[in-house]
Length: 333
Image (tube, rainbow, N blue to C red):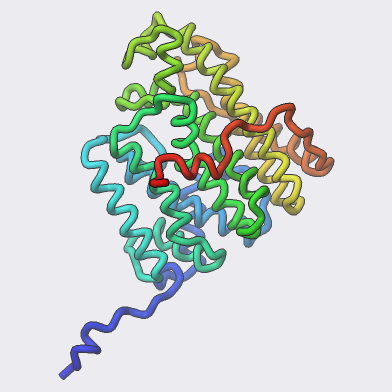
């Protein structure tokens, strides 16, 4: 007969929940190839170790996003009811993965694997999960600061984690700040591209103060008669994106050549999305903006020479919002 201590003994902790690493990496690649062709293209430029770790982290981000948004591989937003329970599930599965226990979900097991290799913590993950909590609360940005706080949690914090995955020391605050800037730039490009899709799902990430300034009533911003004004607001958001994009390049200069090439390629591809929305004006949301294979190849080639030169221009003005300020917003003082 088993002793009680044997019955209650906790299973042995193993990175990846006991899964073999190679199949986890394969699943992670499938996730990025389906969920983000732009990031998948840029990630191929990393050395093998960094590339695989980036895929593993992306797999967790993609899975969390899909659970929170009720979607598959970043597709059409699904049912938004019960979001609070889904966020609790994300947090519980992430904690289980970090404890080295199986989660029965390769996306979360992938996070356990990459965390064991790079030192990512639950605190790092919590910064990202906080963004899903904002959506669960039905939160909407009132000010530009609110917008940037949201962007920090859903993308800036991911950029910081990606830098850690690339080997940036946790004490190298300035380089981590610049990695956060890149995440912020990516998210601003995503938001401006998805004005129409978010509106259809009952979401709006445009600061209410911006809409008030343009005399647009709540919930009416995507009506046809407001499209010219929305083009003006999209240009305003792209200017924010470009400021963070330029700052991010200062941090990329400190990375190894292949890492720098990959990061600059991603910056060019995502930046092109935001600029394409801006340039289309009021027609920007008639069809979803994307970059084709030829355009991606062009951005990768241009990034090669930019990475080789490695002489980024310092922006005339650094971003107004810093990583520390955005992380502190909404937390007890």
